[in-house]
Image 1 (cartoon, rainbow, N blue to C red):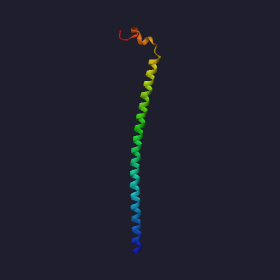
Image 2: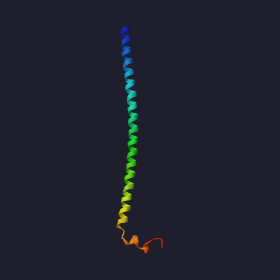
Image 3: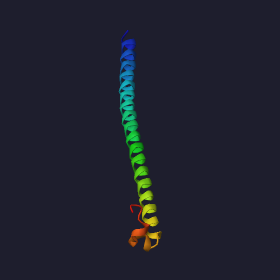
Image 4: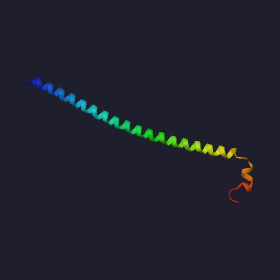
Length: 80
């Protein structure tokens, strides 16, 4: 009888430890998922910033490539 009680207590302790481990793993999984979502959001933000900067560089290159007369000549102005 005492042996069975000891076995039962051992199994209960083992079960409690497994439940605690499972809870810790679940918490860790939630934290990792949150970190993943945050990293994906940041990556998307940086990608958008990169695209915006590329467009800005292209716009500035186009401005520099235009002939100087396009800047000063009133006849080339679209608002005549």
